[in-house]
Structures are given as C-alpha cells and as structure tokens.
Figure (tube, rainbow, N blue to C red):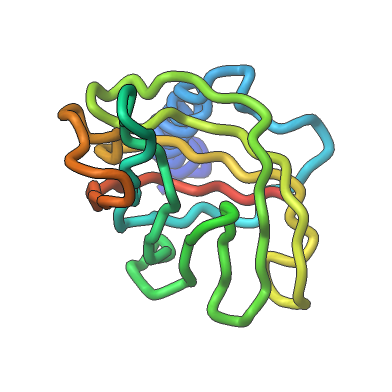
Length: 168
C-alpha cells in the first residue's frame, strides 16, 4: 500500500470524526460557553431526580425546586460521584465543586430542565479541584410537577438526566 493510499484512508475516518465533534460543540448555545482560557476536566452523566417541595400559604401554593439528587458516571458508565443541593458535585475522591448560576437557556427537549452555565468554587485535592465553571446540557425530564400541590411541605421527586461538563 502506498503512503497516499494510507493517508487517504485515514482521512476517510478522520473527516467524519471532526465533523461530529464540530456538531457536538455547536449544539451548546454561545451564552453557555465558558470564557476562553479554561480547560475541560471532563463530562459526566448525571441521572437521578429533581426534588420539588410544595411552598406557599392559603393562596398561590406551588412547586419550588428543593435540590437535585443524582449519581454521576463517566463515559464508560463507571461511578464518578454525586450531585446534590448547593448545587454541589462531589467526586468519589472527595473533591467538590459548588456552583452559582450565571446563565440559563430553555432545553431544546420538551419537558426537560434548562441548560445552565454556572461559575464554581472547589475544594479538595482531587479531580474537581480548581473547577471554575460547570455546564448542564443535554437534559431530559426534571421539570416541576404541573398540578397543584396538596399541602405545604409535600415533596415530589421527578426523574431527570443531564450531562455535566467541568472546566478549570
């Protein structure tokens, strides 16, 4: 086989891979892209529930987000950590990132929680140390219940999933 044929066949595999990467990058709205100069730590799938609490008094009772509760896995499906109130993401090594909302856009998927960009502070010395930004993208489910809440303090757990992308 000649060098030209080897190079040509390599391009046949490389071009679709590059185009797929470009498509994935394009599906995130510009306002959810972290500032230049940050490095991606990793992307982890969160699967769990959004917990809503019935709030209010005599009139106007409604559902308010109390906290997320999700397990995080890596691209191989191996346990990575957990996500809970704060919002906090905690890796199995004990390192943590706590986020603060910067931007939100509606999910392109009907019935799904919004996509977010959060600024973050971190603690610990593990993989999430130095985290400065977290994206929540590719969401499914998790929106607040649609009906009236029965009584203040009642809770509903709504299944959801999302990709969480961490940057330092």
